[in-house]
Image (cartoon, rainbow, N blue to C red; front, side, top):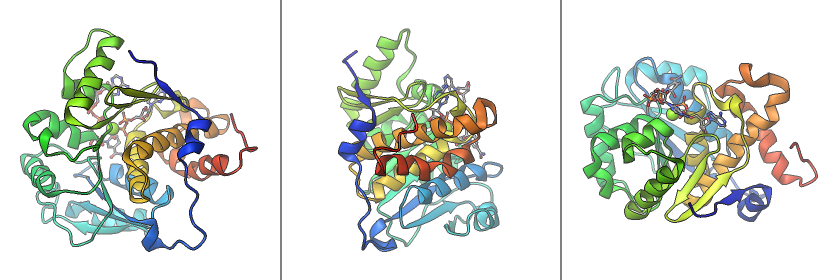
Length: 288
Ligand SMILES: NC(=O)C1=CN([C@@H]2O[C@H](COP(=O)(O)OP(=O)(O)OC[C@H]3O[C@@H](n4cnc5c(N)ncnc54)[C@H](O)[C@@H]3O)[C@@H](O)[C@H]2O)[C@@H](O)CC1
Ligand SMILES: Nc1ncnc2c1ncn2[C@@H]1O[C@H](COP(=O)(O)OP(=O)(O)O)[C@@H](O)[C@H]1O
Ligand SMILES: [Mg+2]
């Protein structure tokens, strides 16, 4: 394995951009989060809230009809567009102009949903984060991989990665296979785990924040929203992935003394994004 570049505060401060004093919600960007199915609307709630809390100006979600009231009540700041189907997504159409899309949390694997993803990939030209069931749909349809724009960000956990690239017998083989996959398809792979590694062809970045408190439902859905938010704020895909993963881990390091490992939940990631940002703004405020 090539020596990784460690993502620490130094590396982050090279990439982090403070918001302009005169910015407004139009400039901060508009994100679209696509996902949800009956019983998994929470994944979209978490992802879209995290997206807003990471600093973009506007967030719209595209969800099946059954999620309409859930989303509107859970997060009044988020706008909602619904599919024609009640329980799953069947046709992704919208008339907004987002600067980036995050797709997958809670999406499900219905055949009609798979076709809707195919149609989106055929036409989409804007930066994209692909997670969860959208990754699983790609794994079932690997011939669709060439449709992805260069530097599309994939955020698999180990099982999702295995579905995508096949099994490995060692850590070395896992890294080598992922690097080859990333290079061949020109994709950025966020290999979630402990630690999370980001693979961009032969370059490997290793995150230094985060802890086992993150081993709880929905923290990956939150990460998808955070990275999508950074993309709409004009970060290059690799920097959006790096900064997103770093801030995400930092929330758990900040919260740990109060929550302990066991009681930390995905919503705690969201409520600590502010403190994670503040630790970048003030170099003397060092929580670690
Ligand atoms: N509140 C909600 O609505 C939630 C919805 N979720 C959604 O549920 C759907 C299914 O996602 P899941 O990831 O649960 O299911 P998957 O079937 O994709 O993955 C679960 C499998 O992966 C393995 N795995 C996960 N992390 C691993 C690791 N670090 N090392 C080794 N093995 C690992 C597990 O042991 C399990 O076998 C997705 O659409 C997801 O977005 C989940 O994110 C949980 C919360
Ligand atoms: N032991 C751990 N140490 C550090 N980070 C972890 C640990 N376990 C899980 N995580 C992080 O939590 C997140 C889990 O994502 P994922 O498995 O997609 O969850 P979900 O699908 O429930 O949202 C990833 O960012 C992963 O890196
Ligand atoms: Mg996940």
